[in-house]
Length: 399
Image (cartoon, rainbow, N blue to C red; front, side, top):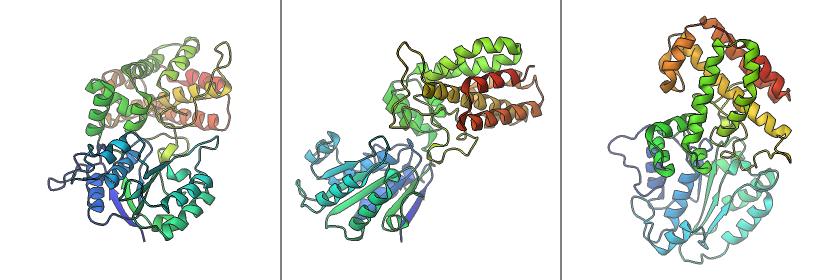
């Protein structure tokens, strides 16, 4: 049976030190457990499960680097030997990396069969052969059955590392043959520091961007997020708050600007319902989520038609982004109105939320939240994005 290790995003106790040379941040307990697994006889197969963009892929790459390192240390790969340099350059002959591809955005049987053949060969550099399967939950069933043969009869000195957002789509027989490490969201302080360092941002901006991405640093780093996205997000929330004091017909005139501005945060906000982050009609806790993020999906962003006119896909994406952000505002207003200000997603906005929340009854904000949930559900059922936004603007409470 699989050896499952649940690793929350909390800091480990003082006796547990995370591997200093791991690139993984904010998962100290999980990283320490992985370092222990790699000491002595490493498992033939390791499955790392965690929300997309939260660090499972990074931890999997840390494992691959450590397994191939010529002089591994207690803190992971040395980072200086020939093997480490080849891994960093993605040119190590004994490391095979597989990820989803094609229009179906999946891992088919062909690369798995090629992997099986390559693992049967002796290592080129000497030592081990390592396979890293990224987004393994996107493997087709035939591909999983092909991989199962290798897991059942592993060649000597081979290791297979799978990184997945969730493992329910993997065959039970695959899960049972892997040591399993489970991640939650990374520690927010460590994740914010990582974002600030990697993207050259101040702490406040990094923290806001992290909240926008639902606590996942991966989408932000992949998209090269800047302070512009954080400022656009804050401005959009402010405009929605201002709608409370604006006549309904005047709101309709401002909607096109809000829709256009919503596209500025698409690349850094997480997609609703992705990676187990949201239920139907809801959103990941603490995030103003946006759909079809370029940072959380390998699919291309909707392209504009010639002349700059948005395609139907882009219209839906922008509307969905705005509706989710709008829902986040309604949720925060409902929390402030119900005397729970410490639970708002963006506490830095409390000075703006508090006076607006006081202008309407608590039930009013609750009803607004329900209306937004229904609008998002209707959009998923192919509702007209412009009409749904018009309806929300007209129904938005007026203090």
